[in-house]
Amino acid sequence: MRLSQILFSQGFGSRRLCAGLIHHGEVQVHGEVVDDPDADFDPQGLQFEVSGKTWPYYEKALILLHKPAGYECSQKPRHHPSVMSLLPAPLRERGVQPVGRLDEDTTGLLLLTDDGTLIHKLTSPKHHVPKVYEAHCKHPVDAGQIEQLLAGVELHEHELKVHREPELVKALAAEPMGSHGVRLTLAEGKYHQVKRMLAAVSNRVERLHRPQFGALVLPAEVPEGQWCWIDSPARILGTSAAA
Image 1 (cartoon, helix red, strand yellow):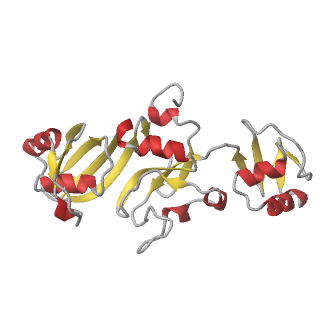
Image 2: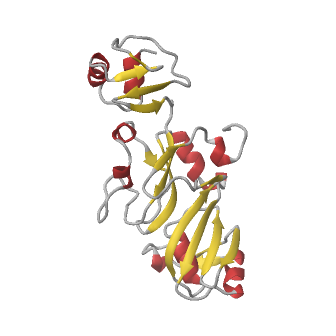
């Protein structure tokens, strides 16, 4: 693939801008400046530098962001900055989108990708990709509440302000964390689901954090507001290959 096409595919601007970066000596491959936009390289596994920063080539981008509180998972935020503002321009340019959403006050593991098929696989209810949430609640979490969360609770229509029948929603797993905390594993991703489930057992979420999505655990070395590449969807799906 031509070097200018590689840069274009990775979000470094228009074809003309990518060619200009190369002509001006801003691009290195294998440690050497390449000033020919038509220079041909095998993109698979390729690492290159643009303006001194190393970038790996990925046909589809898949990244993990440690989301801080106070950011909205929206391209057009209303009240808080968008999580997109935490990403470098090339990732925004190539059109990565959040895989599902976390509320503005929720922290933790957020995936973003430009792979629409993968977004569907990770968010569709039929695939049952589990997500783990850690909630700190206003009131103590007792054994009775844990039992209700596992047995299923009703999410009432007035909470959503839409007209539909209440439905029973179960946690795949629920375990207490200290006196006021609970760790929930959910297969669905309904609107404000954790908060609504805790409200259904007469409690209230005060802080919410997602440490795990599928088989992928939030790395300790990625601080709030920072991101890292995920090299394969298999790390999320817990498979040897992304089926």
